Amino acid sequence: MNPSDRKFSSGSLSTILKSRETAITLVFFLIIAITAFKSPSFISFSGDGMRDLLLSPSLLVILAVGQAVVIISGNVDVSVGSIMGFSAYLTGRILTDHPSIPVIIVIVLGILLGTFLGVINGVLVALMKIPAIVITLGTLYIFRGLLVLWAGGTRILPGDLPAVFVDFGDAQFFRLPILTMLALAITLLATWFMRSSRSGRTIYAIGSNAVAAKLYGLKVNREVIFSMAFSGTLAGFAGVLYLARYGGSDSQSGVGWELQAIAAVVIGGVAILGGSGSVWGAAIGAVLLVTLNRALPVLGIQDFWQQFVIGLLIILAIFTDRLLFLRQSKRLLKMREVSHEQK
Image (cartoon, rainbow, N blue to C red; front, top):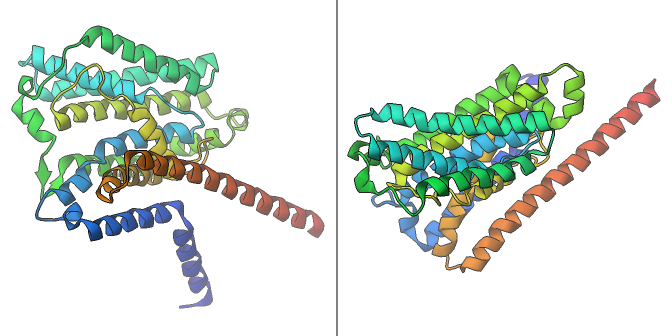
C-alpha cells in the first residue's frame, strides 16, 4: 500500500468512527446488550423478542425519514401525526364500507391523502413565508379536528377489515417482518436521493442558507413544497401500515407521533436548524428511541425516568450539534486567516 492509499484509508476510518451515525449505532447495541443480559428473552430468536425488536420501530422510521427531509430543508412538520391518523382512518373506512374495492387501490388512496395534506402544508409555507412550525401547528389541529368530526366516537376494529390486510401487518419473509423491510427500503432510497440527486443537494443548500440558495437561482419554493409533500406521503403510508399493524383506527390514531418523529431525527444527528445530517441517521435515531422505550421498563426504570432519559438524549444531541458547529466555524475562520496571511 502506498502512502497516499494509507492516508486515504486512515482518513476514511477516522471519518466513520467520528460520525454521529456510528455513535448512535454503538449506543443502540450497548442498550441491547445490557437489556439482554438482564432479560435474555429481549432478543430471543425462538420467541417474539427479535421479531418485536425489528418490527416495533418500523412505523416511526418511516415517519422520521420524511421528517428528516423537511428538517434538513430548514423547516419542521408537526402535523405528521394527524396526517398519519387521517390516512389510517380513511383507509379503514373505505375497506369497511366498500369491501368490493381492491385493497391495493385503497392503500394508494390512503397514501395519496397524505401527499395531498403534505402539499397543503408546503404551499402554505412557501407562499405565506411564515415559519413552518407555525403553519404545521395550525394544520395539525385542522387535520385532527376534521378527523374527529368525521370519526366521532366510532372505531375501526380488526373484524371490520379484510383478513389479508390485517395479516400483512404481521407478515414475515424469511423471518424478517415485511414492515421492517419496507422501512429499510424507504430509508435506503431516501438516503440515495438526498446524497446523489440534484434535488436532494438543493434541499441541503436551502437548509444551510435559504436566502443564498435563492440568490444562486435555486428553486427554493419548489423544494420546500416537495419536502413537505414527501413527508406527507410517508406519513400517509405510515397511516396505512398503522392500520394493518394494529388492526384498527379511531380519531386519536397517530396522536403524539409527530413529537416522536422529531425526537428521532434530532437524536439521529440532523441539525434542528437544517442543512446537515442524514436520513440514515434519522432512521437509526428512530430505532434507538423505540428500543430505548422497550428496554428501560425491562431494566426496571420507572416511567418518569424513561421520559427523562429521552429528553436528556434530545438535549445532548442539540448540544453536540451546536458544539460541532462552533468548532467548524472556528476552523473555517482560522483557515481564512491563514489564507490571508499567505497572500
